[in-house]
Amino acid sequence: MIKHLLAPLIFTSLILTGCQSPQGKFTPEQVAAMQSYGFTESAGDWSLGLSDAILFAKNDYKLLPESQQQIQTMAAKLASTGLTHARMDGHTDNYGEDSYNEVLSLKRANVVADAWAMGGQIPRSNLTTQGLGKKYP
Image (cartoon, rainbow, N blue to C red):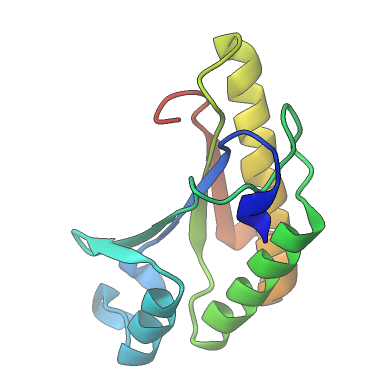
């Protein structure tokens, strides 16, 4: 349903690192949960690129209601396995001024992190964010 909305390519990637359990390893339950949402592993870190998902309206940083619900549901499931720390990288399309896109991408990452913390019932301080602007649109 989200893919049918008319909005530009947007979003954020989520990175989960190996600090979740002793020895920096993920449990089989954590790996299965991440894989069920489409996360991929590279060098011990797991990431989920949401570039195909439309989470925001053009030039906006407020999550679409459907996106907020999906993020909160995913966060709750992953937090239930003990995954309570993540990094959100915000992105924009490749149009407009660099400075505008950097600010917008950080706002988007922060809004996603807020929804993630709420859904996972974890401290917001467990989540880091960065805005990458139109780098890697």
